[in-house]
Amino acid sequence: MTTPTAAATHDDFRLERRMLELRFRRVRLAAREFLTPGYVRIRLEGDELHGFQSLGADDHIRMFFPDGDVDSVEQLRAAPSREYTPLEWGDGWLDLEFAIHGDEGVAAPWAATAPLGSPAGVGGPRGSKVLVGRPDAWFLAGDETAVPAIRRWVGLMDPDAVGRVLVEVPDRAHELLIAAPAGVVVEQVHRHMRPSGAALIDRIETLGAADRPDGSVFGFVAAEHAIVKPARALLLDRWGLDLDHIAVRGYWKRGETEYHAPH
Image 1: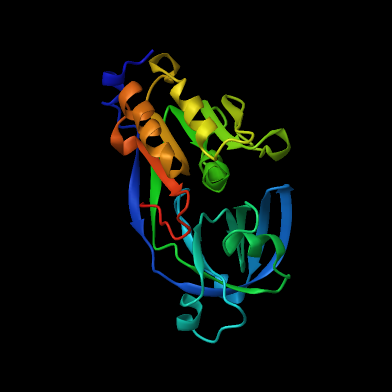
Image 2: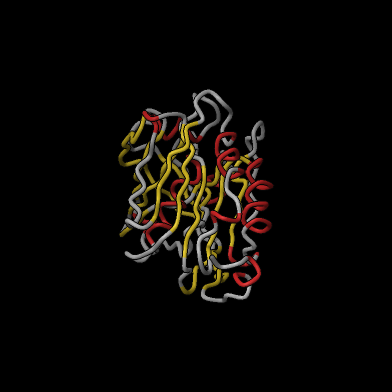
């Protein structure tokens, strides 16, 4: 087993900042698919999506939800908005995934119920953190809001990758498939009626130094803001990972609909 001290000397990979031109694009809702009763994938389409780029697995775009058609970027930017991770895209289309928590807010109800053809807007991403090189092992964990980023990190893995993925969901009916390589253990953590993030925190706190994978490890953890402290305690204190080899995000904050996670 590699010791925490030795692990900190590895430089097999790094997260490198890349800047992108900030653009705002008008789009329309083209399709939706419920992957579970509380999780939906949507497709946006529009000519202005030509040339869309997202270089980092943890990128965020800002989605805008106007009441109707808009004629200018200024009108678009005045509409209610929320941040999301782009999942997949191509020539004139972009796929996103949304966790549906009741009928609160503007984004989730729109993703779940807006008529096909409804207008929306996309801003960004304005910058990326790109993984350069490959870690020896991976540790990814998050609630439903982190699943698009987890899917993208998994997409960067080599076929012989090793590691662990933890995904917190309400129960078996809400489990989200993560198509990871055979050497990566995917565990669905059920919270049942507990607040989002509580079960994931408990699971992370069960992991000790003996659970640390060998070699240089990349750690990504994202969920409700309360995840930050226990995640950093695991990755930095118990596993001794380099601060430059982890990304810990409070993607959202309970009770604050306008919370913006730092990146």
